Length: 115
Length: 114
Image (cartoon, rainbow over all chains, first blue to last red; front, side, top):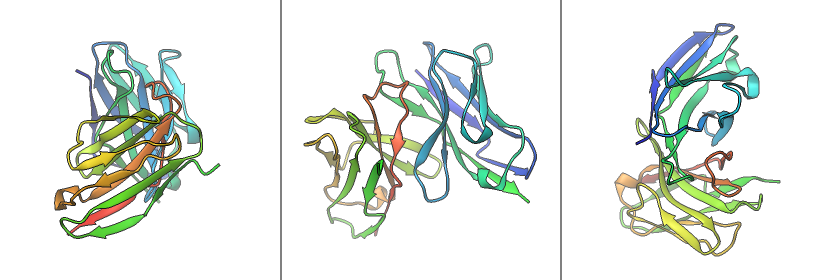
């Protein structure tokens, strides 16, 4: 069965520092992978997604993620953190091959950006 | 284009009361779903719909009812509220529900059941 693990429920970085949020998945079939962001008191919005095209995926707000099949990872990075990046970040993987409409969600990583 | 809207934003209920959380989208999406978000548990799918007149259960459907009479609306009914239903509820939609599609989320409804 598919599963998602986000390493670190809380990550704190300084403004201008590298952001690295980790996501590992397990999947018996080629996965689709997603990162969503939730700003305080708002709904989730898509940052980026991998759907079996280029392994390095660029998203909004300067974020990118690299699909590494050998490591079963889809880590999210941003070279330089901004105060406005403080939010909750969720990684998700597509469900089983026979159920192509459901996502399996990670528990989320809360990113704090310090001045 | 309002996207996905949810009402109310906040609600306090007493145990045993019933209520309906409203969700509407103006993007002509066929697929709509309801999630609940609880600390340490991520997002859990309650119910979903692949089109008007078609609904199905997600992973945590007990205590909730849904119907889909129009493409635009997908209300979630709590039949008899319990403290365990205290949560933040999100409605989401996508074009047809295929996993490669982007899901669009509403701003959420915060529900407190006393």
